[in-house]
Length: 499
Image 1 (cartoon, rainbow, N blue to C red):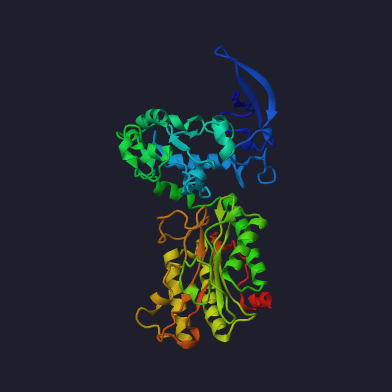
Image 2 (image 1 turned 90 degrees about the vertical axis):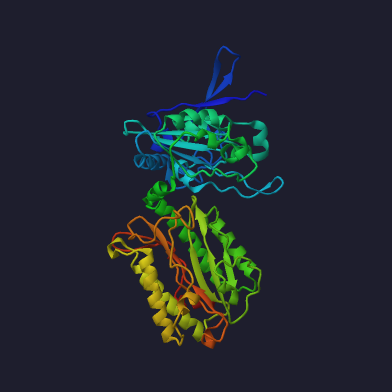
């Protein structure tokens, strides 16, 4: 069987595929090997007739618009992201990123693949065993992009599905240079040697038994591994630089976050209309609604916690029964175009809240509303400052409800932070400071919660209650944008759906 190579016919400037300009079709010329003296060109074929390792507009027009590499994000935006990252590097510096590896549950049974977020943010490439090198030119006026991937392999693809291959790395993903990932040591060595500095977060400890991971991390193979390649290089962490880029969302990113929030919020409303007797049934319903509504998957493992199960912040067993007269706390959200939404709602299993449930719920809701209103640039406040505002508001409200708030009572009742950054990850840009004032383009959660232990220290009619209310918010100049506004949260609205 002969393996054909693929060479794209480009109609645009170097390094920018026609996809970046919204051309609805990508045409490919198949090139068949012809001994050692040359190649014979075959007729041009439409890219829709080919197979790639992920959807393209040509193969999946129901998922991607013309010009998009991933849902909602164009090839041009990916290029702009790389340019922005490169602008933060020193002249002749490089950033080196690796794709995620496949993780196995047991034997040959693998977990669902999830791409490394930083790698995905800069490339849009969704396959394992790939490396991206983004460099700033010596004169500081431009950037370069190398993408090393797996070659096409008909036998492997029969088992594991299509691979995009080397030609797609340049013609679809706009790399300046590409190469086979199996030749990574020889490909990287001259680039690293010529770089003024190397910025990377690739770990040097073993993480899996694959050949790909051993290249980077196996101490017994240092002569062939990543550590050997970096031996004489000046290496700095990439995380602070990439966080500064990723924390500010583009209009396209916010649109994706909004779509995930809209789909997920509507799923919550549908769930509130139903009667539930088991946590797992409610969980399954929401995950189903996320997907049929247009999300690719759940953004994280859902929390569906009835009664006292809600006292555990990350309760994910979801295997208990739901009892009349109790509340159920649901923390779940969908993912669209790789962007997540994070929502928590708490509602009664019965048609209505009890008076005590309603009182505690409204106290938390009032604090949440106040904090959301401050998620704007003109408020000049930070997540840490908002947390302090929430603590004061909750303490005052709980005192009014009969709670003894002396000592460390609030730490027991409200043990987590008010919010975190969101984006491609649920806890996006980890390590980015929550002390800095929020600025337009940042996206955060606002999620006050109260968890009352079933002990004599607390008013009897509130014991065993866990209530959290969470929305995903885009910070804007003058006012916040609630990305999850569809999910109802007023007591009167919840009760209308529950009746």
